Length: 489
Image (cartoon, rainbow, N blue to C red; front, side):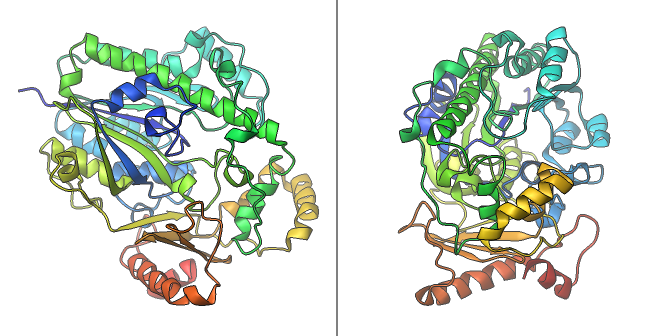
């Protein structure tokens, strides 16, 4: 009997509620809504890290960041030879391995060793594989675009030329070439990450989105980690009008609908080839996006639910009806679940725990604690008074370029524990956070210094520290307890 195929559909920077089937009444996502009709939709899935590479590496290794060592988006955080991932395990079981879309996970040597098919894209177009003239034109067009923020107007390309449909072309070609052997396909989209650009008809699809559709609030960042304030003041975020922020959100929605159409093409090909009943499908994102919440766009080095809570749907062969689960899942649990579903031994290196009992309706719960991590081990600069930041920003941008602020949002280890309706976050050289998620689901009121909350803070801090002490923090080797305390506390 032929082994079941596996497709992981992964988006980049998609918030947990940004699909119509997940409750967003503005978005048009008919193909993903259709997938939900014969899948299990998980409403409380969280990423092991709220930035791209660490989350993706954690997803594929089934390990937390402090075990796999992926602390940044730099190439040295990518999975390399000697690390065990879902891809390697499936390849050794006879699977053909393919990538159509964004990689940002595996190193060059790992790709060369374990992948049979590679058509790779990044946010600025295609980077590896078979190129068309349109692919080259897209790269030339995007290379001069600003990274994050408002970009007016649609891109000057037909839908068939645009990145998402080209990823669909390459994904379909992979399916057509693997009708006999079991396969694994990493079907991965750069959208809806920056740059927030998209072709027609998607750019104009949400012209009706206005300020009333934003979760905009004049957030008072006093009493919150300084890095969040920094994020609110850079790339024009502090100067955008509500209408400009709504335009960015409309484009973000258009990116999701464009991506949905590409998912639809792949699903149609699966049906045409009679593969759907033999294929396990996981749809998820690497991390979330503020999407206008707190007046912010994109992401920062923090743990708001808008960033760490992600969408996830899982279809297992034979499933023909929809189900919904509020079991709490960490994305390191997906690889072990896939392997157990395929009756393949789970490597001992994987820390994730299979949630197959939830998929099979044998359990309603999974995790009682959710952990997430972010930040490079380097110490961030000291915070400054909010009133002094504008002058600092102007001078540092002149001296070092616009990315200088990453010293604040990217440096300094940070970790989160979400447990029993509470969230505790610890940052190096910055303020702590404590939120009562039941009373304050928008995470506005930081209770870390509130006198009545000190027992809860100490309880969660101690539990988080105990967890951090159980595993190494670097990819090669371990660190002493004293070194770990310096890095985290």
